[in-house]
Image (tube, rainbow, N blue to C red; front, top):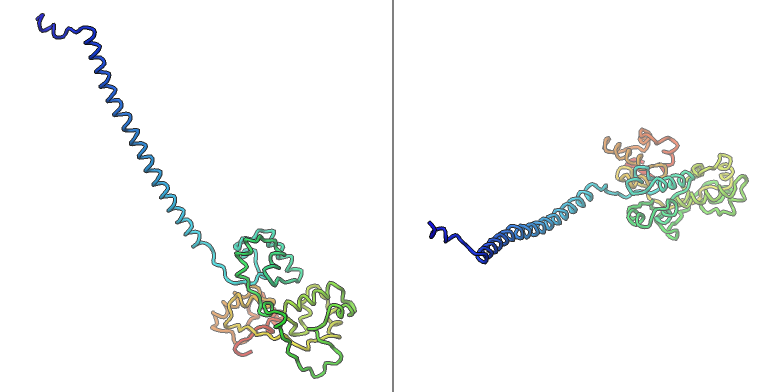
Amino acid sequence: MKEFKSHFELDNRQRNGILLLVLLVIGCWALYFLVEPAQNDSYSKAVNENQMKIFEARIDSIQKLRDSINQPKIYPFNPNFITDYKGYTLGMNVEEIDRLFRFRESGKWINSAEDFQQVTGVSDSLLASIAPYFKFPEWVNKPKTESKLVQKEVESPGLKSDLNTVSFEELMKIEDVDQVIAKRILDYRRKLGGFLDDRQLYDVYGISKDQVKQLQSHYTVLSKPEIKRIDVNKANASDLSTVPFITFEIAREIVNYRLLHNQINDLDELLKIDGITPYKLDRIKLYLSSNQN
């Protein structure tokens, strides 16, 4: 019994050695369980970050593709007839749209991209994105040097002069015609490319019947601008909206009416469309044609 017990009797050095060995073993196990998971967590974190970057890139590409699909397609249009909704879809703010409306209400017209920016105050970047879609009438786009006036034979012209060549100074000599009206007459003539009919004087903004009568007593259309009438059965809404008194909304109604009835045989059928009055039709006929007239 004493011999068996002697095997378990240790001195201080031996006990210290055993204690140190136990501590080393415990320390090794602690390093194994603490350091290795940390390395695994770092590796997992790096993998997750890379995956997140890939997912974010895919989401961005899908978002851009969806935005490009949802973005409304812009068709050629006349900037003189922009509506509130059209201006909003183009990126114009309320103030810019209002400036355009006030300008048009004064009887003036926009004939170039520069005019549009000057009137509305849109930024250069917005103008660059929408200006390629501006569509103006042929008689606006043609240089003045190419605009030829064809002489019209008049049986009894009397002492009247040509309304399409009258100058500002000559207009100022007419009784009741002031500087404002004289300038508006010349501006409207320039917008049209030349008057086709004496009655178009009534379309000048702010002009009175007495002023028109005074003008018609001295001037008449002795020459007409060379224009090509637009075929109402072939033109699209953008082309039709370049005609005076035809807004883009009315142009779309004309196209819808044409599709519903196969074609328009007589321009008088346009009176069935909301927004077209006999007065307006009288002017519209100067610039449109159909299969019969």
